[in-house]
Length: 396
Image (tube, rainbow, N blue to C red):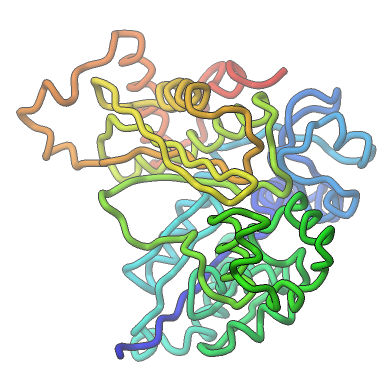
């Protein structure tokens, strides 16, 4: 047997709202809602812990958030600012391992297997990362360390915010048995209600079920998922293997979502995150991919290729939204992800004009404008595009 695997999951606490409170100190300690408006239009993208105490959560209609937290401060999404800080923080994280898997703008897995001699014990690495994020960026992060990505993910949620929890190899099952059903990652409210109707109200109750029984109630995928997570076995949600290089971002919802307007707003944010990372890496791609996870835990990835390099957030969003409209049947979603597949270096496409044809002139102008804005921001300039994609596509 080789070395025991060790993973670290770093999760920036209430990232969007924390950045707003960082940039506007007068908002510290107040309920802050990012996304939507005080008039009740749009969707909540994120909220501070002060707002969460009122029951506000991401993907909630702004009108409901206003009813729950009438004193909350509503702020627009400043994706450029969040992406700027995210990129800087990810650069710091990459100093501790060459194997880093960023799964969203504010989350990443670090494979620390075999790095102890160079970087120290994984727990010490976790504390160092938290300290550097706090001192360098004025933000807090919660860190989980464990023998699998799945356990590390739940460990980072164990003592939020600003926590660190370590699960040793061999301790996965005991760790999970000490959690509540609501703490099990990926277990939504609808599934919990079905479990409770079967008399399963604790993790130990779920642990006692035979896999055949769970499959009978929740189907092959759902039953297997429940059986594995109740034992601390990684269900394979976060795979570190890639058939080809891709850039993606995804989000798991606190409640299953079937509202197309809410999904569209979330999809736009994911597209912005993906394109920012694509600009940083400098790759080219003509393949759009969507990841959809339904309430029964079945997961599928659908793809579409276009004739030219996808060079702007607008192009990616339009293609991703079209793909969602064609391949989603309205079933409530637990997770939505978006990405670019088969990303290649620009040099590898030289001499292949049939593979990367040029888009129309208006699309090309938009692409160049967005790339120019990115380069200026990378150089330290604070600049935004006039109008902006978010205004064009917002749910208002």
